[in-house]
Structure formats: structure tokens, C-alpha cells
Length: 163
Image (cartoon, helix red, strand yellow):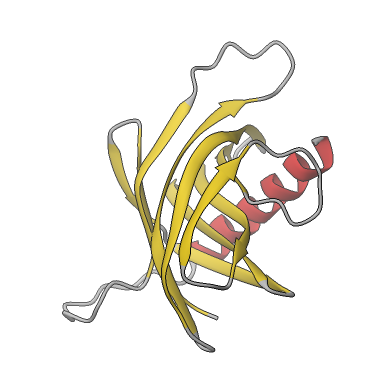
């Protein structure tokens, strides 16, 4: 579990740093591309995304840099590459499980709060050889020893990403 948190923290930190260099604005009315979600009542659109395909599943990650000192992100791992609605579970370390995480990173100190899913759903509405899209929502808890942090409700999630 601790290895997963370190890997996730490093991934979100790397995405956050890379997103600082690639910001641009557009007035195009093209369909939504990327990842977006609501956490603690705030709407978030990822400033950078990443995906990794392993066999018949994909991991999708979205990071949002709120400032030069803070980054947050969502990670959904084990998502089947097939249209359907799937249950997000608490991670157990078993192979091919579908779970999610939410990370809040302080870029000045590289400290982070890692929250892992306890329950939720993800719906893949479209998948092709070049694209995957759908929606998600889940509840995540800080699993660090002695944590009193309240759970995070990740709602209104959506993704539309190239494969």
C-alpha cells in the first residue's frame, strides 16, 4: 500500500510540474477532452492527463496545479477497455482490481495526502482503438496511520482521453 502511495505521489508531482509548461487558452467549441471532477464543492479540470494501458485495462490520471505550490489529482487504475459500468473498490493489492485515488500535494515540501477509494462507480460510455470516454464518482479516505482527515467525495467526474 505504501509503495502505491509513493508511486502515485511521484506521478502526480511529475504531472503537476509538466503541466506548468504547457498551459494555453482556446476559444474553440470542440468537445471536452481531458479529465474533470468536483471535490469539496470545487469544480476541477485537469491541467495535464496521462494514461497507461496494461493488457485489457487502462489507468487514467488527471492532475491539476492550483498554484506553483499545490497540485491535486485523481487516478483510476484497472479500468476495463470495454463499454460498461464498473464498481470502484478499496484497493487490496490483488491483480486486476479497479480502484481510485485522490492526491493533494504540497510542491514546496513534497508532502502529500493520499486518499484511496472505498466505493464508487465508473462508466465507460465509449471506447475505440484511439479514445476512451466516460464518467466517474467515488469516495476516498486517507489511509495513513492515525489520520483524522475527512473522506473526499469525488463527484461529477468525466474523462475523454486518447489511448
